[in-house]
Image (cartoon, rainbow, N blue to C red):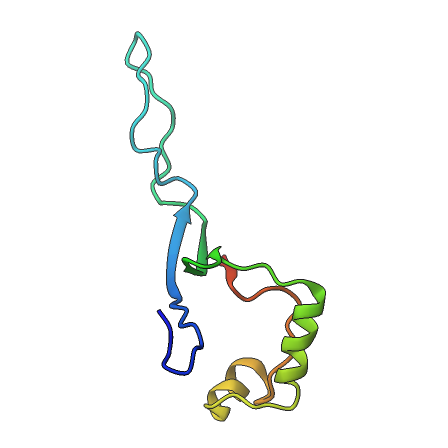
Length: 108
């Protein structure tokens, strides 16, 4: 799909997924005398993955060090739109330099 002036339109999708440590442990084999493995009562520790994807670049997108440098140059001196929220969450309303690609993030 293209804009009228010839630029390509790229549509990005975003989603999150949480993977839990003991999600699939509710079922287990039984031994000949009925013994089973100990099953944890909770789902355990989890990792959330937040990612962007599109048809053109696939899942996530790695940035080279040169691309990351260009992005950081663009961000330098810029503030977040909600300055108060940024100050509360990050301690400053200024955008900090990125150290890795922001297209796939993992949270505990």
